[in-house]
Length: 302
Length: 302
Image (cartoon, rainbow over all chains, first blue to last red; front, side):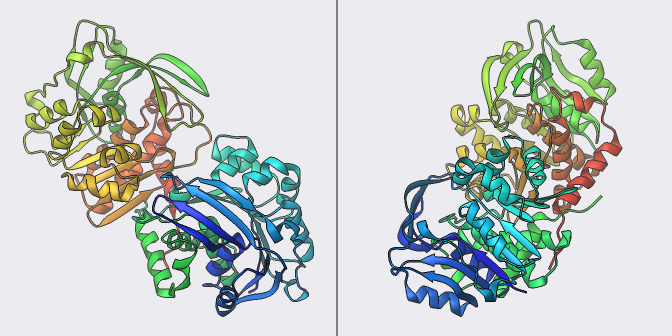
């Protein structure tokens, strides 16, 4: 099956209580692609500047990420600088330089226009909508966002949510967008905007999967070493969408397994800066951690 | 099997974003007893003043709570006044009047001294230790505490933890007592203090059960109506210990089921002020909600 992602590629400078890293490779589409590449081929639509290392693009291509939709522009790549305190759930942005990303107008190559699965990573909701219009009859379109767009382009965002099948956002974003402090009530409001499925990321506490008449709660795996949560959400989305695309199965049971695979990938990712840990993963490590999640969450039915 | 609880009985004045209640019946031992009474007979050791309503004691007695260890003192019952914001995980104490509770020196009646299961609710750790010394060869002693004792009687608390089999505290208390921001590392430190089992309550996110080589994560049930979280932790402990006592089974699988029963009881309790919702529960409602937890958390093994 074919999986398309549209999002950012960036250099991240990150400081956490456990260390810091200057100009590490980051960006929502990058994390997503590397994570999803463990499950399926990925088609990437994004923009980088001339300073983006060729070696990194080669790494992506080697991982079966199709770069035909990657725009290489004169100028510098998007840069983000942020810091985390001991509460690793919240990033404090210190600096953002959009650079070439400012003029990004995603063009879906003709060869990608029949992609069956589409992930709209966190970019301007109007650009997300333009991507939906460029894809012919996809089976599933999922969409992320962030507080910046909820505050600045609320109407456009709600319009985009009306065009997608699934929304994948975090708990704070559910509260902010819905105006409901109660996550269950807030989630219902977001489902009323159009998507049939909502995934609510809860950081270290796991994730919730809402559909009209059902809720699934995936646990967070308690980890001893959490070095850097940057990209955890996109890595989650990559594992989640990668698994769904690889199976072509969107049944409730398959979506639950997909949430666990997303959680597995995110749990690896936070164990290192950038996506270093995702560079060398093996299928057996991924399956081993899925088993860990099974053991973690299992209890007998009555 | 016999289950003994020692703790407070109180009047609570509580304000939440959803309403307020003056002088509602509260106290750790009260919540615990009512909750556990759905599973087993409970033996209560506590103190009340002459203002505590006889009707409430009759209610407890009717629910199979043995009041032979209840001290009725001249003076007023313990009073607590608190408030919650939209973050219902954190209570802000506005006023505490210890009243007769100040001089509480728990006396375990001879008839209770061979209790097999013991829960030391949140009271002075020196008093908790005195209770352990009054009970002959219990099968399981579990213990709660709060930030007040972690700050004020740290050494005594650690000594008490060295005398018990199990500790049931919340995530913030794990961090504060262990000095570790990482909950997994903090939990290991607490297990090194003596208890073989640690239950970490995570409020709306559920609970973790730690033993030497295993971790279990119980989900939090997303609820639309959370009126008052007061007593949720004690209600959880009541369902948890009540189930264990009723079965006499302390296997890892039984402890996991016990965590779910604890979560079931707590999920009902937060749906009303005081323990109003626990007054009229039925076994079939309890089992129905256990099934809901099963459906909530289930995903296929690989």
